Structure formats: C-alpha cells, structure tokens
Amino acid sequence: MERPWLKFYDKEVPHHIDYPRIPLYRLLDDTAARMPDAPCTCFFGRRQTYRRIKEASDRFAAGLRRLGVQKGDRVALLLPNLPQFIVAYYGILKVGAVIVPLNPLYTERELTFHLTDSGAETVVTIPMFLEKVVALGGKTPLRRIIYTRVADALPFPLSLLQGLREGKDIRKAVHPVEGVSWVRFRDLVRRPAPADFRPEPVDPDEMAALLYSGGTTGVAKGIMLSHFNFVANAHQVVAWGALTDEQSILAVLPFFHGFGMSVTMNAPILAGGEIVMLPRFNARQVAQTIHKYKPDFFIGVPTMFVALSNLPDIGKYDLKSVKGIFVGAAPLTRAIKEEFEAKTGGRMIEGYGLTEAVTAIAANPYHGVHKIGSIGIPFPDVDMKIVSLDGTQDLPPYEQGEIVLRSPTVMLGYYKMPEETARTIVDGWLFTGDIGYMDEDGYFYITDRKKELIIVGGFNVFPREIDELIYQHPKVKEGITVGVPDPYKGERIKVYIVLKEGETATEEEFIAYFRQHLTPYKVPSEVEFRTELPKSAIGKILRRQLREEEIRKAQESRKDADSRE
Image 1 (cartoon, rainbow, N blue to C red):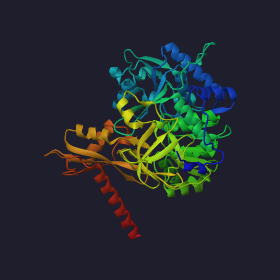
Image 2: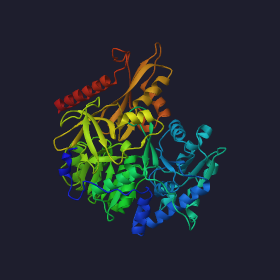
Image 3: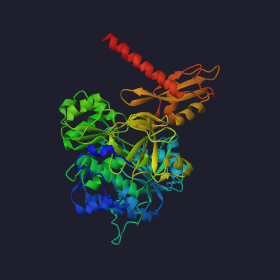
Image 4: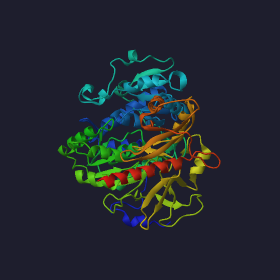
C-alpha cells in the first residue's frame, strides 16, 4: 500500500525492522549479558544493575517453580512501579507462565472479576493491598499470595515517603484465608537459583500477558498479547525515540498499563538504559526526581504536564535534562505542549496506541515535523488507513472514517471471545473504533470514538459498567453515563438520573454510592437529576445528544467569560 508518511521519518528511523523471534524475557537476559554492571533501575536513589535484576528474576522464577507454578499458569501482578515489578514480570515469563497485570486501585468487585476470568491462582502484591485481596476469600481461584514491601527497594525508611504505609507483621494484621498460602517475595529472591536453572522454552507466538481493557466496545476484556508482540513493540519504540544505553527514562506511568509496560519498561531494558521509577504520580515528586536524577525521557499523559505546570514553584526545579516527552492516552493541546516545552527545552511528542496492539504504534517524529492535534504517523512496519464506517471501502485523505491498522504487535485476540475477536480483526486489520482522518502527508487525526469510551486522565472508563450500577440503585428509574469535556482530565464523568416516582435523592448520596463500588477514576464527578431523558424512536437513551448538550454549555460558558474580559 502507499505509505506517504515514510518521507517524514527521522533519518535514523528504519522503514523496516528485522524483529528477533525470541521469548520476551530475552530482552532482560541479553542486555544483562551485554552490560551486566550498567544501572537498570533507580528507585529513590537506590540503583540496581542489570546483572542484579536478571539474577533476581532467575531466582524468582525458580521460586515459582518450587511453589508449583507451571507453564501456562496465570500470575497476577498487583503492584505499583517498583524494581520488584520488573523482577516478578520477567521471572513469571521464565517459567512460561502468563502475566496478568492489574490496577492496584481496583475494587474488590473488579478484582474478583479479573482474577476469576483470567484463572489466576497466584498474585504478587504489597501490604497496602493485601486486605483487599484477602477479602476475596473463596470467590476466586487464588491459591498463593506473594507479598513484597516497598521498603525492600528503598535506601531509606519508608516513613519518609508520604502516603505509603506497610504493617510490620502482615500475617497478624490480615486474617489468613483457608487454602491460600503466603510467601515472602524476598525469600524467593534470596535463595539462589539452581546451577542448572534454565528458563522454560516458549514459542514467541505464545501468550506472554493477559491485559484487561475495554477493547473497542463494552466491558473489560482480556487482551492476549504474545511474546513476539511485546518484543516487536519494544524494538519499534527504541527505533522511534533513538533510545540508547546512555539514556535514562522516567517511569511514572504504571507498569500494569500497556503504555507504561512497553514504553517505560520493556523498551529501555532492550536499549540498556536506566529506568528511574516512581510508584505513583505526584507533581512535586516528579519535579524533584527530574531535578535530581536528570532523566532524558519522560513518558506521560496530558494531565501530568498540566499538574506540573501548575506547581507554584516549578521554576526552582531544573527540568532541562528532559529531551523527549512522549504523550499519549488523551489529546495534547497546543497550550500544554508549548508551556512544557518552554520549561524543559525538550520536544513534546504526541502519539497513539491501544492495548490491542500492545501500546504505542504511531507518533509525531522525535525530531521532524510535528502537527498539533495529530497523533502522528505510523511506526515502522505499521500500516494505517481510514475505512468507511461500514468497513467496506478505503477512504482518501481528509475523509472521516474508522482508523484501522495492521502491525506485528496486533493481539492474538480477546480471551475466550472468538466472535468479538473476529469482529475486531478482519483480514489482519485491527478495527480500532476510533474515528478520524489522514492528511496528504500521512499524518493521522482522531475526531471521535466509534464507541462511547470515556478517557479520564488517560484511564479508560466504560460507561456501561457505570450504567449497570445506576440501575442497581433502588431509587433509579433510568439513567445513563456520559463523558463530558474537561480542561484538566480531558474528560470527566457525568451521570443523568431519573428517579422512581415518589423518590428523592441528592447528588452527594449517589456519588457516595459510586465511590463504594468503583475505582476512584471511574467515580462520576457530577449527577444531574431529570424528569425524563432524550430517546430515539425505538426508546434508546441518546447518550450522544446529552454529550452534545454539555459541549454547547461549555462553549457558551467560554463565550460569556471572554465577553466579560
């Protein structure tokens, strides 16, 4: 097919990459063999070499084998960004098991679904999340809990880190569950791996990880990604950013998310760079970390850069080490780009990706032409095009349709959902559900979403999940969830509710209800009560019409503000 974007590639970016057909764990092992004494991780100043991380992953793998974990088993990671995440990640792969990365902020209800759907019998976590895991009791297949402490990775007492707490005696603090064994992470990595230890042989096309996302429609689905998918994406990211073993990357995006996992963990490990990690985003802590450890690259979402720019004393931090700032998951505005580039002197590069293709598969060039509002051009070996909404014909430049792509990173499919897989991958093309267009240079733009996915601060929120909760409330007659524009988070969540006759309720009452059942970023920020909701001729509530009402109100509010000025 015609690829007009190739002429805009930076000169050092190849048009094609010969991807090695190797297991994913080889990224770590090969780099450790090449440069064993180079720093791999930096966690609040404590550095660990590639040799040490590699050996710890071997020991962890050997420990998993002793516990009975076998090839094909699912092992869940319920961890913030820690060196232990990397050790466990590659260790799980070395026994041929499948990684199930989970968001630590999931509620018990959400964890129950993910652990049960995946069949994970083992979970690796920290004390902060143990009570939540243990509370699942016999509701899930869980048989083993491996726990580690944040303090084990720190060069100073945990008490110096605000907001992170760990009990002294976990077994006494948390009630044990019958049939579930407890294992200390450090016990597994302290015991040397056998002299004859070898990673489990795996085919590169076998599943390496099962990541949960909403996919292109509906509620959460398991996305099956192969060893080769991850290896290929790591090579694409390294090529696009010209990553080397002399550079470091700030890893504050969560490793449990495909974006953080591939771009801030696997790619720098392939390149041999240092990963400067933080367990969560805090604007001041990020500024302090950049000031002190001088990372070359910062990967994030727009809300992070807004928060940093709004720090009252941001000027006292030296951010000039950052040369490349890769941004995804939500639109990057001109104001955010120009303001943060002025503070760092680096280039802010907007890109695009989705978990069904591991993560990033397109971006504006690192050094070349940036187009504000564009998600950029496809990575090497990625083809993208615009097709009509019925999927029957390719469209020319500037005509809007659905973005479809093919790439060596396209998923194996949705777990236990062959029909959904067949609808999403057609003749090798992944139908993304995003609506947009391509210009004459091959730069792509997103204008809408085919499905009503809401993106709050870079996190996907699926309206149907909240809709179902609305209807479970005894006072509700009908209701619907809508994503409305938000200058800080990109979008925020608003729900519209019609109460049953004779019922009364308050906004605070419903927000408390949502907080009880949802992860914080999924909690609606506004509840509007109405006597009726707009409907189509067949009685379907018109979500899009409500969203358009909110957009009009926001535009009128801006006009009023401008006129007053």
